[in-house]
Image (tube, rainbow, N blue to C red; front, side, top):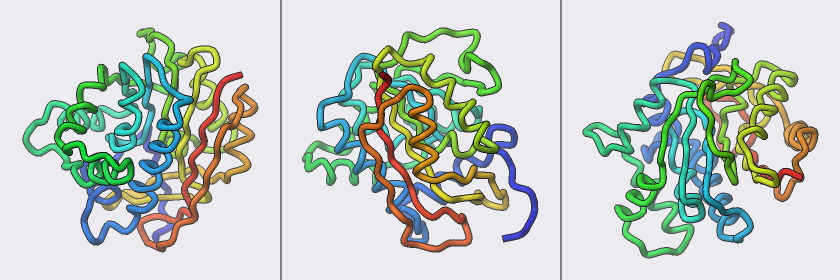
Amino acid sequence: MDSSPCKLYNVDGFDSRLFLETYMSDKPEMVSGEETLIFPIENLTETFTAGHIEGEILIDLSLGPIIHHLYAACEFFKHTIVLKTRDRCIMELKRWLDTRTGAFHWGHATQLYVDIQGNREQLQDREEKLRSAVQHVIKCDFEKENIIEPLDLPPADCIISAGLLDVISKDHDDYRRNLKKFPRLLKPKGHIILMGITDATYFTVGKDKMHIFKYDEDFAKKALVAEGFVIDCCKVRETKVLSDLYDYKGVIFIAAHKK
């Protein structure tokens, strides 16, 4: 990799479709599928089917226009609200939600979920359930204390955040500041599920080298505990593939609840 400064996702953004094709597709050259597709689907399916996390409202705060991690969740919440920091990601996600021509094909991820769950349900039915579950897609801004200002949302039973804190946080203090904005979106005793990348400094989307804040399992757990969360589950999987696209060492999954 060159030594040029990394771009910040929340400032510079990236090509949303190219991000999906690079890290979320079923192409043979897509080498990170075990971490980006299988790991989150497996752990979310296991977490939700255990029956401890459910309710009326789920809020998703995740990197890019990804939706595959929500397949498992839509069975357990009546309403899903998706918050995004970038307009291009909102446009890409809405293209799929509205079944527009040219939308990214998520069939391979749907198949993964169905296989992991052991469900014979038709893939199209599963995708329609997820589309119906997503009630709103709203822009948010982490520069504001209330990230959805001037709006107010009903407090959520659960927040899922995949990869977003990693790319919008410059350092340890910034990560903690951003994390502090999550609890105000939650009900008392609400749950949070964080998924992220450990020991990384960059990932690439096309010619863009994007920043990732470098942290480990211990830091992530301590940051949640400092915000009044109790850790229910933490899993880390080391990456098995080396690539010039990124330098992360593993992926992390943490489920916790507010005291």
